[in-house]
Length: 159
Image (cartoon, rainbow, N blue to C red):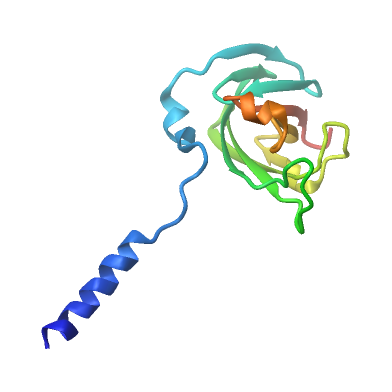
């Protein structure tokens, strides 16, 4: 009889241990209050890079690369059924509000490839485009690099 009473407790404790996977870089939400290294001012339409944790002023507004939330891109020199994707989190501090922007980039994309819709996000009158995310999995740079770098461009909506 005790076994029958204990069984629901075992299931409840087992289920409590199951949760959603943690992001690759859990610091995305905790970095909001921390000052980020400023890499300078960038113009609208200008291609630029940001290391994770760094920020830039774009049209007088602050844009920070917070984290790589996911990176399942198919590694170089590997044959994959699916190209995979990477997801990055940016924080945009505009005149009206602070917004989180999540952009995806599929595997096998280079900075010269025409951006797909998932690489674009619109917020506060601006379009944010993720052109690249380095290092790419499976490269020598990926083995040596500690800090990911995003290649971005910001344009006015419709521009």
